[in-house]
Image (cartoon, rainbow, N blue to C red; front, side, top):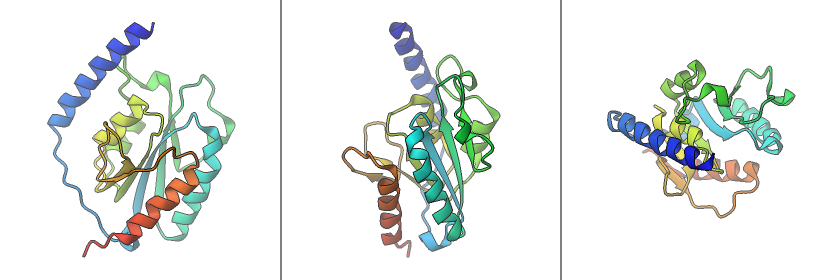
Length: 180
């Protein structure tokens, strides 16, 4: 089964590369004080991280920033804590095509939304989340430094185990950047 998975991933990467070749995007950053929308791509299998995401959402809401989170959950049953939350959408396995590329209406809406900032929390390198980050029309993308990174600002943090701390670092560095 693993052999077929790798073949399907290879076809998925080739399909994504063709789609990215047709996409034009120029990074634009504005001061954090002027940011109004923020998207977050997150591996929702890490259920212990969700309280930190909720706290971050609340903190950004207090700053007047609308945060939308798109997660990918590979399990059969979506955890109760993820349901009925307006700012969180979780994609499931049945919302991916045979090559692990998201095909749901929610994924397309997230990709096409022009967020001021996109934060990629895909620490486990889920291909479906990578597709969303790569295709996103966000003005400015932040993520971990890595070989597949499509980020404009790459954070080189070893073992980002606590998501709350990582998000704190992201905000700290975004505040340091002055768009002039």
